[in-house]
Length: 274
Image (tube, rainbow, N blue to C red; front, side, top):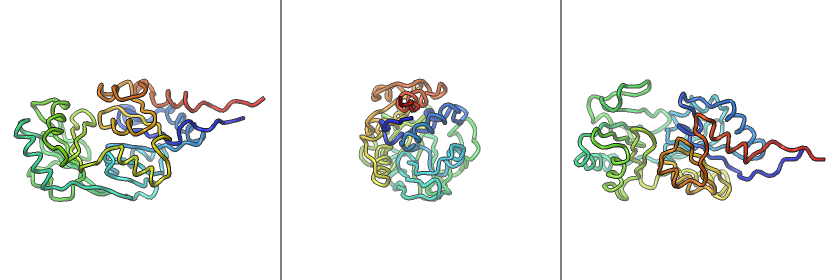
């Protein structure tokens, strides 16, 4: 049996809406395709908007033990050691002032923050979601949002849709903050310069690979920098229209094993030699 060299040394995947199905599971087919890519010599690298604290339960069933890029690129997380290699936090006075400026034009905002570190919490104001979900910490006094170091702020508007709110935040925040849109109701304010591309580049320096070695998968506008950085960027069939415009290829949806469909083509089973 002969196995050709892998076409890419790194397979970088977003989690929600990409590698994960709607129930947050990974299909047997996708697991097998990832295993095939690894056997061919590639490395699977998770690149997610989720903070490291929110990744443990999702990555354990995959047997994932390597480095993960978390928090939209703000964190490098050693999953096997359960250790943060690096992290970046927001300047709280700056972001509080900018949130107030956004609210002047958007109308009242509901807020969520992710506090820093491996013990990070997701703190939300009362009407941030239709209900307070498991793991969310409801705050009655908005000053409680800012009591601890913060890695990201999430904003929601009753008046503007996500794309409109993201555009407004981009315009008002300029170079003071990074702004991205990672999912429904998930417009995020991040430390300046933070992106999935920056996180991937940091992982590349640590692990010894390059953009030319990288195949990347995503589904939302926060994945645009990652797909642009990688040699080949794949948007899922369920992807946001803006991401689809930046992709080299459109895969089937996450529910239809889109990651597996691409990997099976690029990392075929070995053929027998005569």
